[in-house]
Image 1 (cartoon, rainbow, N blue to C red):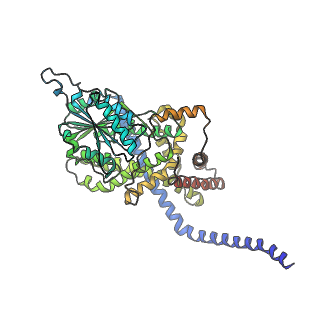
Image 2 (cartoon, rainbow, N blue to C red; image 1 turned 120 degrees about the vertical axis):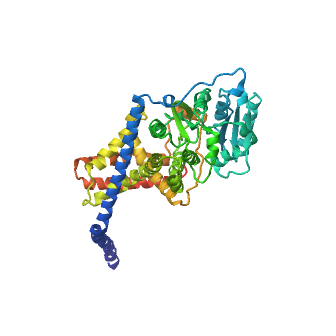
Image 3 (cartoon, one colour; image 1 turned 180 degrees about the horizontal axis):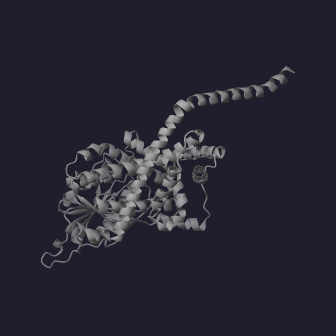
Amino acid sequence: MDRLSTTTLLPETFQGARDDITEQIAVIWQQIKAPVIVPLLRLSVFLCLIMSVMLLVEKVYMAIVIVLVKLFSRGPHKRYRFEPIRDDLELGNSAYPMVLVQIPMYNEREVYQLSIGAACGLSWPSDRIIIQVLDDSTDPVIKDMVQLECDRWASKGINIKYEIRDNRNGYKAGALKEGMKHGYVKDCDYVVIFDADFQPEPDFLWRTIPFLVHNPEIGLVQARWKFVNADECLMTRMQEMSLDYHFTVEQEVGSSTYAFFGFNGTAGVWRISALNEAGGWKDRTTVEDMDLAVRASLKGWKFVFLGDIRVKNELPSTLKAYRYQQHRWSCGPANLFRKMLMEIARNKKVNLWKKMHVIYSFFFVRKIVAHIVTFVFYCVVIPATVLVPEVQIPKWGAVYIPSMITILNAVGTPRSLHLLVFWILFENVMSLHRTKATFIGLLEAGRVNEWVVTEKLGDALKTKVGVKAAKKPHLRVGEKLQLLELGTGAYLFFCGCYDVAFGTNHYFIFLFLQAFAFFTVGVGYVGTFVPHT
């Protein structure tokens, strides 16, 4: 009898304890809500709205510039002198500048043949071009394969050099810097850089080198990227939308207004004298290409972006590869901004407007504010206001500004307009990863110089597509979590915007959705450390 009564009392005891804890939490929440939470949340809303306006103004400004450039046909061929290089009977091939083509690679089993073959297929006088393969591979089998490929092209009369080193110091920047030290480079006027998955068309040099030959003030000519696997999956389509905007708007605006933009690290031609004057390659950040571009710009060199020249390359087709790439692309610029802010401000060679463009527009708004506001505002502040109804977010800040920014971003890829909602969700899901990387760069935390080479599939893509056609895809656990993340994000996005825009005050539904939102963001964060094979 005593045992039965004890068993009956246990659930009541636990229920009472739970009720006491709940009441204590409610009391503590009410005590700190008015004096602490509400003021902090209002300040956060204010700061996020300011950042949103900054981002919108930047997007509108770039859209206006693009419209004017297209309207008045102010492309590179109108702004700079361009004449094809013609044969000279007296000088012979000496009339053509000496060109060095660098191909840095690291264990590129799938793509080394594609990139080497494309570089060796470039149309240019054979005695005025040197192909330099900079192989940092640690796999001896791949090393032998690359060397054999170079020997094969050399046997066909191609002037190709296979260069290795005994360490990987400086990663890509270190390899490029080491490659410039060889004696034969002293005879070269220009250096072209292609990453291991890039496949230029044979006429690439004929369409880029003349800008450098006839315009001595130009230090860099940058071509656009063309993605061979954009249609492989939804994730590659999302990447295409973001990168198309980068090229068609950001790079074009920089080239048209201030003759400055960030070098993309590949598919570009540098004047070697400009590269040397800027101090050459440095490995102090994971964005050695942007570092070099900023330093060269501060020396007074101009850059030209050629959007009509597209070089085929590959997008990361796995989440693991994409996350590592985005960490590098978010952390590196923030760290470079920290290192170069005062150097840019004190520079005497460029005018005030250009310095303001580099500091404010190029670095602060595009590389820092854009990442922070996407995560903090939409994943933290807006959910928090549901718990604190005393803090209100105006409709123009929660709905209208984000909608305008999204529409302006979509102009780069008209064929993917029907995927705009998925792009919004994809960008919001990645915002935590990018914001984390941005702060790592600003604070120079542990992973600031982490460099993981982006995985490339090359010809394996064809096999992969064939397998997909013959066999029904099987979703791994990680992929199911990603789909859950996107699906929950979609539900949250629409319900949240509806509540904010129309004032339905469905707080209990919205709170439930916000809990799922934090869960999905957590999945994205944990996924950073979970390998996907």
